[in-house]
Image (cartoon, rainbow, N blue to C red):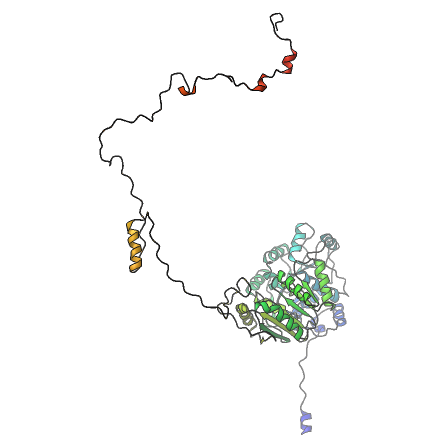
Length: 529
């Protein structure tokens, strides 16, 4: 029997492609080998040959599949033949965040160390004069965020007439952050004869519309179902009360073997509050959000990558801009507003075939947001119970969040039912109301309510002069008539005679003799003036 088994041929694993089969040049292959990479990822295997052919590409792949190397490697091969001129970059890569721009720049340094290519970064928070000096030296690859690029272009420090390759990385995130007008304006600056590459984690309808406007006969590359979650990620969802979220997070961190973790919040103010709370409970934690200066963000990321910080509380601005090898956990302290952000957040873990964990904290009012995420990924998120906390059920109704902690609409379990209000008693009629209103009130008390309240009539007016009865003619009463005025007089007789000038009431200051007048000789008969 053993001999028969040995005669069966052993099953062979399907042969995987290597980078040498993709048409890359020798300097790039040497840099890839020095980094320890041998086999390309699916998106790299399909995108690199198409980009080398000069065609437009629309690549859709989940986060963490190597999209960055999918366009940086062939770009460097295309640009290796010539040099750039001052202020005229030969290629442009647009990134939604500064962290992503820094990550792409690091890849160019690693992959292009055997090539004579230079790059420049145009991101906020850095000196614009230094960025202008780098552009004056000639740039082969320009990596920029839309805001700083437009700002420098309007100042005359940048010309886009020689740009032949355009890359819009994380296109769906670019649109979510409101960069659609900026992207359209930047594309209008570029020459029509160019190669455009779109890489995105999801394929939203807006991405399809922009691809039809910017791309010419593109090659669509989809290596996985849009918005799918990597199979190496173990996900879980804990339903807790709003006031128990911080306690639930601390219990999960202590119970799990957390090597390093990123904790995502929906708002920047929540990042600061949660950071202070974890710091107060003696956790090694740092904070990262858009309001921090670039130097603070760089220093925080350096400490987190070096292992000095075990936890990093951040907003969605860093959801795709942080590439940490071996990230063990991701915690969603808040359920994201957009279902696509859930995929981007948890995609920070479970990379390179390693197992990752992603846990989400939800409140009873997050039901609709959780259902949208489960509909997007095509599978329910496994539920988990936090030790020491009471189980919680979903809120009734539409599940929309309301103001205040826990939602004002959530009824307390021991709340007493409200008593119905007794019907209002009819008010007594006012004195000026007519008889019809009094009758209507009385009918409301004794019988059914009338259809409408009687209209209030105006009080009876006095009869006109013509309608008054005739009276006996009487003598007119002239006792109130004013006495006739005396001819030539402007006042009545009781005021006395009219006064000319000041009369006897001459002011005292007018009786003081002027010094100039006193110095002159007095006019007399003997000494006339």
